[in-house]
Amino acid sequence: MSLQDKSLTHSKKHQESPLAKETILITGASGFIGSHLVKTCLQAGYYVILVSRTPEKLSIPTARNCKKISWDPKELARAMESVDVVIHLAGESVAGRRWSPEVKKAIRSSRVETTRALVEAMRQAESKPRLMISASAVGIYGNQGADLLTEKAPHGDDFLAEVCKAWEDEALKAEDFGVEVAIPRIGIVLGKGQGVLQKMVPPFQWFLGGPVGDASIYLPWIHVEDVVRALLHPLDHLTLRGPYNVCAPEPVTMQDFASALGWVLRRPSWFPVPPTLLKLLFGEAAQPILSSMRAVPNALHSSSFEFAYSDVHTALADLL
Image (cartoon, rainbow, N blue to C red; front, side, top):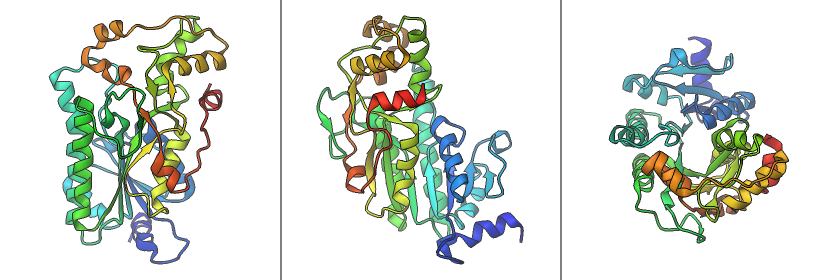
């Protein structure tokens, strides 16, 4: 048996030692959040299996406790035999381009169909993972103005809300054969040179920054470090199951976010980008930018999660 195979089997259900780390299968490892998650898991000593359509092109840190596999159904089912936890982050980006019918199909299928493939692989495995953490997004709520959105808030009826609902429903099917499911509804993630900051910081640096779209909408922001910790939180907090909002406890308006960004960068926030321009440029794809989602992390709070960055000024100062 190879060293990798031994690593795969020894951690299953903590068979060898109560201190043994579990095996985590991760999809979407090359993405913004996924790359941070993989680094954290490897440093913590978990054995990590990365799933990719092109595993040979997947750039990962050199580590003995890491393996790459493809989405081939048979390979996926074999891997599940030695997996304790599945963390599913894969999904086509929704930002930066107009939503043609082909793009909308890719956005949906990259989430729903990959989730279906994972659930089917778990179904086939004799020894199944104990937990699936399948990402969703606060976009499931749609545009709800200034209403506080807990995990019990109603779903929206726009395209992204419908995609998120189908995505979550597919993941919950794993409960039918005994796998517990946690669904992190991820907000707007702040990371150094990535995500929303990658788009908003350059105009500010040129003294051209300001609120994007409607200044009164709420942004359910969160620091990427807190996202990674929130994704791993269900591993040892058994009450955190089902949907849970992954966003900072203090959502801010776009006006306040732009002001905070200007304060950290020592630049004015005086050039707003009007909603009409966003609609003209992106059409329906402007929807996520223009939707107000005042989501709050009730479930995380109930499970004793502590945020490292609960204030937007502190979060931005750390990243910029």
